[in-house]
Image 1: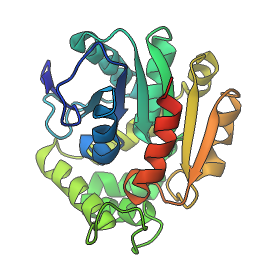
Image 2 (image 1 turned 180 degrees about the vertical axis):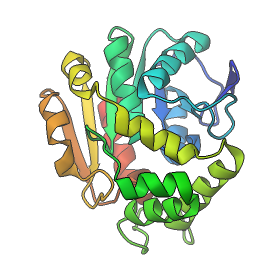
Image 3 (image 1 turned 90 degrees about the vertical axis):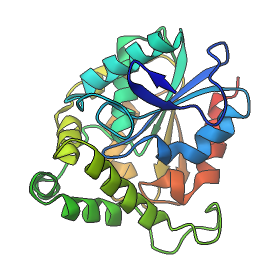
Length: 263
């Protein structure tokens, strides 16, 4: 589904704006496909699903946006284009910051926030920033290694032969080949520069769910203490996975999301 040149995966069902809406927001140098399993299930169980490709990523047109604030504004404009008055936002990593900022900007429009692999400040190491700028494949390798808890796949993986870490690497390579130069660096700089996290969190009144990976090396659960403290009404679920928990533990993530979104 295209909205103003922006691609949204609707989970294999025609989008219906009258249903409870869930918007899925991916992380750096990813696209909508990281949510394929969760978004498809929810689309077939009573939700209107928009799993987006951010501008400059995947199938969406236009240049990549440079700041979390710009991305949050884009999300709210997307809701307007889809005819959606209210939605729950589910964001992973960079996407979690976008969701948080969008809720801060339009509190009456956001019915819930699910923040996966989230932290604030979301500082990126100098070594990774340098690799993203000057040696993209090295940056992809670094992120891929740090985003998975092991090379042995979890029992809940969708099918035999489902190569989680290999799939993640190929996705980042595909986004790099189709997108603008140094996209990884653009995304990481947006995360690194976002300064409104505490103010945004303190303004959020809707229900909030943190989903953490117990073996997450990119955004370790302990690093989110300040963000969690700013959202004292939030619930936290921990799954046995690394940063790419949606693929490593798809059933556990879906169970957490389903329980959170259910009225």
